[in-house]
Length: 157
Length: 160
Image (cartoon, rainbow over all chains, first blue to last red; front, side, top):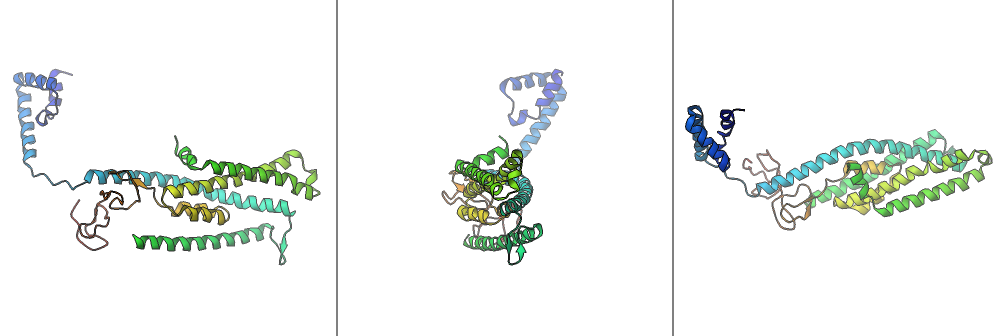
């Protein structure tokens, strides 16, 4: 990279005071000899002055803190969403495993026969129908109770 | 540390101990009772007896760990953790855990002013009053970026 190219890359930074003392000296020395860089430096200085004269929009109070809080919340929520997707898949599989294991254990413990009101409860069909009804009933009751509680909390807020 | 390890560390040590105890109790019960009661069971090979006694206890152990996880996780999210623990225990076939993961609240965040833990959606910190989210200038309720009017009081909002 030639000296001209190095200095050309510094030109936009010089008017805003972003160069250190050594870089600034290097730029000034080059600009004394190079008319093209001198012209470009004048153009960049004009831009910089123009930008300083523009009205500054008022920065809302505590914008930084609010943005930081929001970033933390969004990051945590995104991580939670990914984790929940995996967990729900694994739990669906686990729910099936638990259901089948209970049926299998019940069959072994009862010797394959547990007759109540004429129905053999450890037969696969009866067992799966009974456990499905029980699961849906308890889950529905829990969902209703939780929904009510959540509504009350929202009202309190 | 992976997310799985982080979440596993949440599970209380007590849950691991209870899980191991229950698994052992289950193993001994299965080894002692069904094969003695059932005349055909006595003729099973030892490997078969062991497999049937050991394997079904694993879902039981995992269930206890999941109960411990729900207890700790609901607590850190500011949810009613005792209620949730009972729900996941009482709802059969692990459906309570699925309900928990669908309905759980977002994690609490630290206030950037005082460090107190606050709920998602709060406009101000309940401890120090610091601003956490953009609020309606009229009713002071939290509003989302891009809204032109407050959904709570209808006041027009200044552009962010």
